[in-house]
Length: 449
Image (cartoon, rainbow, N blue to C red):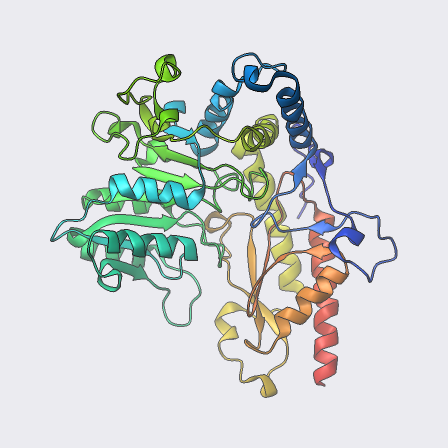
């Protein structure tokens, strides 16, 4: 497959890659070569643009101090520093600018949204989610249910894959909503499941939830900056996301949320803070809260200026790349190429065959792919399940990859996630990862022979 489809603006040289020496690649001859970084699903790389903008903000702090709130040497006054972010957030998630807010952290924003939109009654109180959602989401769901005096074991309804399958079928999710809709207060899934990499059919799930009278929200941590989104047109009630994965804003980067404009007149912030007060009178410190219309009224405290600068700089690169339409095309090509290479490995086991492998002493090392094969049902992530499960194969492969300058993401005990991010990864990155993974499995296999 020919995938030399450069972005309109070549951006791979705009990112700072750690070297082999810096990631602990001790088995390669040149420690100063760039490492192969395929971990965008956990933490995106630092860009030169972000590095520059952070330095500028530190300079502004040094030179202007408090005056920088209104008079900024780089024309980014801190009182309005999120304005350009909101505009680009809207483009990134398919929303109007007033429907998005740059604020807080992912789980904090999830609690804020559930505080406003999860309103259980005696008959309609359940929270529908995927089984094995990201732990922080699970904790939030359980604590929100408990805060309403409900037993989480009863209030939380989870959808699991069918026996022998790794991902959820669309018809199964829709059937659960259809069957239990009258008891479901909130439908909330991950846009992309963090462990398997499955991209859920967000539009059809949202539509079915609305038909049943449910509120529908989304955790877009692994979807934002990864796949195209149309939150406004889909009729999503609310969504939350972090920005340090595919959006490359840095560890603990400031997060985002979406509230559909249909709620502007009826759903005002339940937990008000001064940064959500309208700007025209915010600094006059009035005693009565007057929220900014839309999602930005949910802001509470002024955002950390370095975190906003980091996000702003990264979003500029998305803008230059053509946002998600251009990036999605390249992402599908790169991930498809990686999948093809993996399928050619002698150690690849088809998902429907993986369950037939016996216990460790009777099985040879190998791997299968948890992520759907349909490009429309995944983003830039392939999750590799190493076999036999529980044998320690994954740990040995992961250690070998690191020693050879390939950085993926391990999920103990048996999964490695590889994510070729379209902003900075290449065919060569995919080929290096598969090459060293095959070498690692050769070693494991020979030791067992």
